[in-house]
Image 1 (cartoon, rainbow over the protein chains, first blue to last red):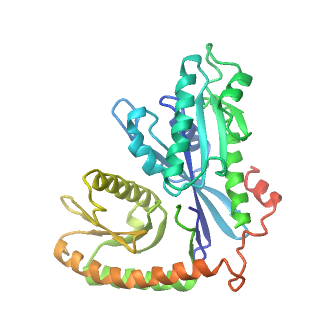
Image 2 (tube, chains in turn cyan, green):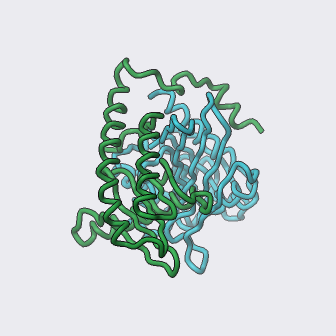
Amino acid sequence: MTFINYATREINCKIVYYGPGLGGKTSNLQYIYNKTAPESKGKMISLATEADRTLFFDFLPLDLGSIRGFTTRFHLYTVPGQVFYDASRKLILKGVDGVVFVADSQEERMEANVESIRNLEENLREHGFELSTMPYALQFNKRDLPNVVAVEEMYRFLNYKREPTFEAVATTGLGVFDTLKAVAKQVLIELRKR
Amino acid sequence: MPSPELVLYQEEFQRLDTALKKLRQDANARAIFLIDRTGQQIAAAGEIEQFDTTSLASLTAGNVAATDGLAKLIGEREFSVLFHEGQRDHIHISIVAKRAILLVIFDERSSLGLVRLRVKRASQEMELIFEEMLRKGEKSVGPVVPASPFAEITDEDIDALFSE
């Protein structure tokens, strides 16, 4: 749910990074955090286990600059990818404006990718959203690993509605900002429609 | 259904701001934050420069969401008040008008009883303001309210955001 504050001339949008466990959602946020000028970002919060697995969410507030005199602020969240954290994932989707799906390109994770997209669809529906109309971008992460599935095949398996799709290596930053831009753009275009 | 978009105009912002300032004084609190359930800060009063307000808002919303989840699991509709007790500072969290979260940070200069009492009173006033906000939001579907400043965003405007 976009929050437009006319008093402070701010517009706040929420983007959620979704995907299977260990797929690189947190790495996406970490890279964005590292590469953003200090004045454009807030603190990155990671609610993680001792082993650095996301427990509840990561959170990164980002200022993209102003549009028509309104400061455009994006709140980026990740969900915990591990299957048994489904209750937490549902909570984080509350009020979402756009979703990035971070798919793991490794062959052995294809099933987990498919299952996670299905889970995303279900959980969005519980909040009254449809993935088919939601601003959405797809990322094939970990393209630098040896055992990756061909891009065309992943596209066939995972692309939902011809959403913008990017190859990425989140740890080095390849594709990270392209993915974010693609979803942010759709969120802003949605605003125009309202 | 997803909740409707929240639009805050100057007038309601001023009224909320005044209500928060009054509550902060009445409850003798360090700081007070009004936060949307999705984690966006709506207004704040008191020693706010002492805190990382964006993080505070997001974590509070996460906290409330997790507690809501717990309530449903045991068959409660919600836990309308949360209280975190620290050594020096304490946090009182409550739900206002079903869609906003009121966060009060206080120390030994106040007490839980006083905060609870004042929050209750202030909540009623804020509920009225929220009702007004929602009414205005619904009206904005019609032609009466000024058009959204985003109705005329161009592709160039959007591209400009990303050109660094």
